[in-house]
Length: 216
Ligand SMILES: [Zn+2]
Figure 1 (cartoon, rainbow, N blue to C red):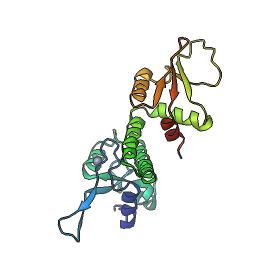
Figure 2: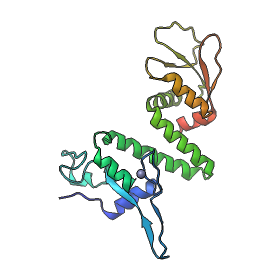
Figure 3: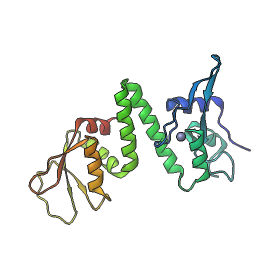
Figure 4: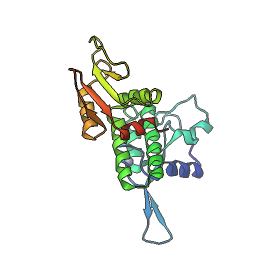
């Protein structure tokens, strides 16, 4: 017995991500016209985050059939990515799929609100960053949400003595692997500026990054 999604649920999942594959590395458009003007093509799949039946990928026996066929348990993917995530459920676990879904929905909101295509490119950039450095972005988001006017940050080791001005945000090498490389990437994207002085590596967060991080 498979707990398949009803058609309206499938349509809902597709619409919530603007009919694009939710895998942040893919983002394939999944619908378009057929030659026949009365028909359309769909190469998207409403994939189950936890499988529709026992023995399937990521199956969770503690869920009810209703939960299993609800929108909350679905993610819109292209056919290749649907196959990919089901063939390697260890690599593509429930957490990964939930993160993809959340990012894809967030991107769809950003694109809907900002109609310019340059914004579509910049939202792809943020999707990429969330994927490369999720922990750093999450920590910056938390910091800026509680200190919405902060723009300056320093990077330190926890063992260093640092007499700060008190209002800077601080990120520690101890908490983030490859912190310098991650900051270089942010700098390459023009999202932070190096203003190092007094022998302390110091950056300014640009308004573009700040507004992305504090967006609901
Ligand atoms: Zn895909």
